[in-house]
Amino acid sequence: MPEYYLYLDRETVFHRLDPRTKISILFASFVASILFRHPAYVLAILLLVCFHAAAARSLSNVRRLWWLMLLIFLFSVPIWALYAGGQTRLWGKITTQSLQYGLANALRIQAMLVSGITFLSTTKNEEIALGLARLRVPFAVSFTLSTALRLVPTLVGTASRVVEAQQARGLDLKRGRLRERVRRHIPLLGPILLVTLRNANQLAMALEAKGFGARKDRSFLLDIRFSLVDWALMVLLLLLLLLAFLLRIQGKGQIPGLMA
Image (cartoon, rainbow, N blue to C red; front, side, top):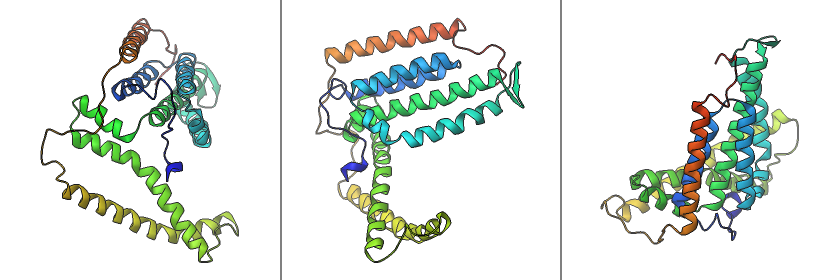
């Protein structure tokens, strides 16, 4: 089910990076977007993240999830605007400061989503597990994380197969009103859940048969090492994070009068 996975086999500089560098880029983008509250600063980080996605040729995956990102953006702005307070009343409970805060949070979530999509588009699951292991993360944790990243596309593929099988037997899921169509999908949850449990059981038996966790020292099929590009990007990330922290310490990127 390759179409359900986000990884794109492309020849770019970011695909060839060490997975530890890619994890560092993901971490740095998250930290930088959290440091600031003003939408202008968060928008600058989002544009930088989008440039990263374009350079990694991962915008096709971003476009695949545009509807989800749009829904999150539309819901985030009013929710955070109602949560926060401010000094300049705009409309009802919404103030100018709270609206800016809601917009900044919505942009922050978009930046994190684009950064995460780019990371998954340029990094294989095996590389994620190996990179985390080289960062001294326990292998059980890194393996669990990489397996969890496979969960969503596996569930989507399972649901697609179950729906196609039921449609081949005469089940019409497109006829009638929305409420009727939703009701016809409910019985499909049973086989989807059973197939998922069976796959989980098979994975558990395979891990037990191969002696998972029997030894602390593991060998890996892949071999990773830092290149000159990796070191240069790590230095650049460190400088950008230092700049972000300095701006934060100086009070830049905040919203005056915000109560949140």
